View 1: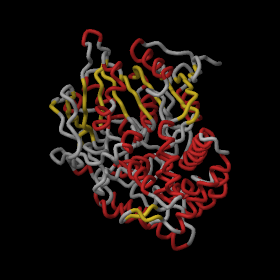
View 2: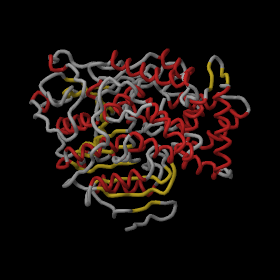
View 3: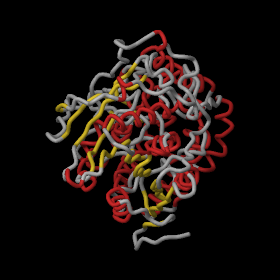
View 4: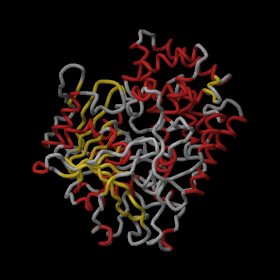
Length: 531
């Protein structure tokens, strides 16, 4: 489990009220296309080329592809097929972009054609974050949110490399995941617990290396950005029009850096700080989740400091004695995960109030259900593999490998920043990529994009997972005249569809090319601009 940057949590309230959990499921993970594999496809210890490395030109067999759009299968056994206007296809991309004539992997696409063909602008590609979110599964679910954009754009979702149908990474079984959740302490307090924590993370990495050896070295965001440009070409678009949310903003920034001349209209919402390394991201999220928790507590009339201590006290109690929920247990780690998921959107705050009240009375079912939703666990005990892909992409990107000693040294500072989330996120810096089988690409991503068209960068002041400051940093990194900052004064992870002002601003940009003034601020009152 991790509270690292995740897909914007979708409709949590509706799902929980209906008594459902994570959708899970999905088609079996794809594997590299062995028909084109060569000896050059053997993974190297260092992984994919760096973000600044030039790559050879792509062969005509790839650039000349024409997707064969067909009716889409259901994304899981308990899910309906996407509506009749959605069509699915696959596009082949190089496993290793440094060797474009070598092995290929499939990238799964889904598309709904523009409603008004005469006014069509082009394709609008989406990435909903994670990393590891399936655009093929998510986009049809949120179709209504983008109906206006779908009048003039073909709406296109895709599973990035290493995700679901696109050579999806698989690292462990459902039984292994369930056992880890039940037994591994995510904030270890003893030498024995520390050893078990690190051993479990190392076992996860070993499972990725064993089950997905061909793909794991090549799951970098850089490689996915290169895939994105090939998809653009195959779809017949001169420029890339793109909507990235959460981790999707890192992908969008990387694309703008690599292909500034191909940037069309790019929106980055809920922005990852491109200047932060592994420890920096953990520190930012410690601050961000605590800020959101404090805002929640104030909304209920509680003193944030007293309310925080109340929740920390509950977590300490669960650390000593987890609550029994049927045949399962609500541990401290699962409770913390359940709390975190509600902070992704203000509409979920009543769920947190009810779940905390239940847990304090010895009933852990509500928090456990929230944690299951976040962890992609369905009612039958099956886990989706987003967390596998998430870790594979993150660890391929980041060269940082903090040690347990370095993580422990962070705990006092992180606990001061958040008595609730601090220790968890400090430990996560060491556990996340422990014993990872390949080296990471670089310490921080590159997002400078001189000469690119203006890119809309939207940050929300109460965002817990990608705190607002990341949007300021991204706009600056993209460069003067490229990054255009829009501030949403509000709560939650992602602003489009929750702020009418932000939604109207993004629509005007994507549909009419209207670039707002840098620093435009949307609040509960009127929008304003600032220097």
